[in-house]
Image (cartoon, rainbow, N blue to C red; front, side, top):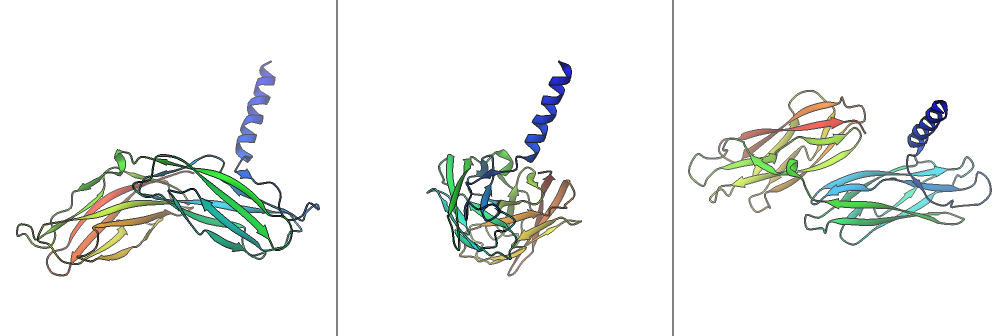
Length: 260
């Protein structure tokens, strides 16, 4: 009996390991080796309100399938996806990165994303996956802990607000965080923000440098990507704001890289 249970546990672990995604029905040709399938995330993709998430879809080509495939991605109303259309050529790698953006005022709940692949000749195929919009947690609230920049005169300076708690990112994934300028009522200058790792490597930032004009909204969406081979652990991110005239100011926040 114990031996049977042990075998069942092993089989369960093996199946869990190989179940990497949800496959579409076969497209292209029904002839052996001439078709393709579309592989999408198995579980719900969770994205917080006001944030952006990157996901991967993949063409599973049969050994003799050498056609271009046009992918059309349609997201339910309330979220957006980029790209909406892309042609994966026969010579291309079969992996496509999608960027899902959720507005701050998006309704909480599940949103269906449909992916249709149409080959040059043969049958098209489609598959769906689900995006779940969730509320930001306390870890994504902002704090203003930079020193005052600009001028020491009342109303003439600014501070930089960054995430309060550690921002968790899986290896090989991208996360969006918000950085905000808190302007004194009389502070009307442009501010150049520079974002960099305090030390080490393993993270990239987009934008790494941006000018927030006096007429702009004070919020900047920062895309942080953890490289696939990034070391696990905590990284300190430095944000420096330099006004047109007056003193710059800096603050830091933490990014925690975790395993996929």
